[in-house]
Image 1 (spheres, each protein chain N blue to C red):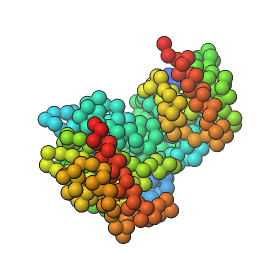
Image 2 (cartoon, rainbow over the protein chains, first blue to last red):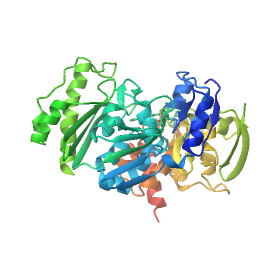
Image 3 (cartoon, rainbow over the protein chains, first blue to last red):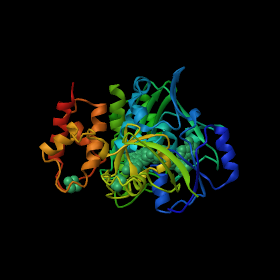
Length: 266
Length: 157
Ligand SMILES: Cc1cc2nc3c(=O)[nH]c(=O)nc-3n(C[C@H](O)[C@H](O)[C@H](O)COP(=O)(O)OP(=O)(O)OC[C@H]3O[C@@H](n4cnc5c(N)ncnc54)[C@H](O)[C@@H]3O)c2cc1C
Ligand code: FES
Ligand code: FES
């Protein structure tokens, strides 16, 4: 690890002031991705701005059928929150299935989204639920947030403050868990709302994406059988030592069906 | 440049100066000489370095020491009573031969306590799944699972 300076601001204003001192600074949330990246010298920031002490980034609120979760909320706290379990049980389940207990005790929602790992779970839920990412500068709809491999719409210095999740009619998530890394080989989040169905996939492409063909069919018949024959073309999907692109394409269909089954049960 | 760090470790106030890149596990092992916390993989995978940070099990190889500012840390050295009497979880590990080389044991014990905090009455499957952040290269896990189930029974009021 290269040396760096460290600050722990108490407010978003103080964080912005710290940023003005160094445009190469990086934010630190749980550190579950960043600390390892620093250790591998994949990142070399001169300054880390620890977001832990900023109150505005914490807490879970439910109002007007919207669940708002602060960026620094840890996965374990989302999984255990009664209000999330009640309003959007599928979201609590996504959080409960991330990594292992130690990772869930330390990793955060904002860190996961800003990191935009192609195999991370939260991106599928955020895109599937059509959530809004509220930052220190603006509101970004999920459909405009994930741009590519580890690439998001966040500008340098922009802090995720919270995410607003609209409550769906029903939703479900199914993940084919990589047994060693626990990340999603493929994960599919399916969500039924008054304005239509959304299907979001993680693990299969450079970043989370929607499958509109499945959405149209499910809007007419919300059953696993309805999408049985819809298989994505393997071209452009991830291919690595864990799974070839055609296998991932197959998994997208199977996981989508399981997600529909899970949603229909709730 | 070093930064002041104040925290509580196993009930004792600690006040040190650290370089920001110091890991929590390095502070514990190298500075405080609490070598019960082990480093296995050093990459966040194996759980040998698991400690409690404000009551939650975390991997101390993937946390900066400064992230524990003003926090309470408990390591395996802080689990038994001050008089040296084993915690029921430790006693169960001993009783059920839940260790061979013992390298994974401190992390296993801390994770198992975290598991019971959220689920006082786990099934065998709950225990197996709930300890998936901790790897053991010796035991084949069976006796670890037995020990955790026995400790759960012993710890229920
Ligand atoms: C063993 C292991 C297993 C894992 N398994 C899974 C899994 O199964 N599924 C899964 O989804 N993830 C998994 N993860 C990743 C985990 O969820 C991470 O916690 C998460 O990706 C990053 O969150 P963090 O809070 O630790 O962020 P950090 O590592 O602190 O930060 C990550 C990045 O986000 C930026 N950032 C953080 N917060 C903000 C903010 N509020 N605004 C703007 N930028 C910000 C940082 O600058 C950094 O670039 C795993 C990690 C480990 C170590
Ligand atoms: S040494 Fe920390 S997880 Fe392996
Ligand atoms: S007892 Fe040897 S690694 Fe678990």
